[in-house]
Length: 291
Image 1: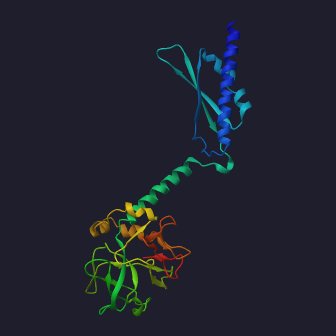
Image 2: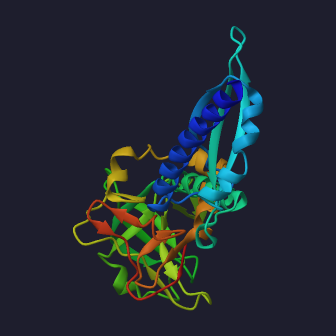
């Protein structure tokens, strides 16, 4: 009688286990992607009166259901009861085409963190739309222009730029430009320069052209990296002392470039340089550096 009861109990457990695992397999086969050794789904928690019953359904039943499913049992002994409990779990072996190793997952996570960190630093830079009011040759330096640039402040800023070899002076007059505005002022051959005009250049630095704000931008418009919705979450620009101390520009500048369409961006296509009016571009330089 006892043996008969044990067989019945075993069959009941086997049936419940089979149903649960079959349902889980069906869910997985419906398109769920998973990582090897990472995803474990608890199918059931079955009470057992006798622990030695586990052996009767451990391997054959699992093999009969699916060769891609592994089942493991774990005992939990209740402190106030003589009942044993078997918790069953199912882990699915990954398909060859969808396998993602833990190392790859960690790399992806690290890459995402790095991207967020770079984006955060870049958006602490005070990059603005400007308009050159007046430009002239520096009296003490043959390679420098001096520009008065309207960046939406009470007075135009004086900025020196080494564009003499690359941009004719007449093209600077009235030009819309992109200005890095929270650098510490620098004395450049007797002229105090309060900012930097951003420009694209080819790898040989033989061709250089100023970045162009989108049509509709006005002096003082904020320039940032990301999507349109990021505007509302932009931090206040860092003060010039912090930009210099933390070497923010030095860490961001090597990651600035234009893509194959001339769109300016930070690192990749997810971090495009933009204003509320659209994207910042280079007129003709593609896959170029920005500085």
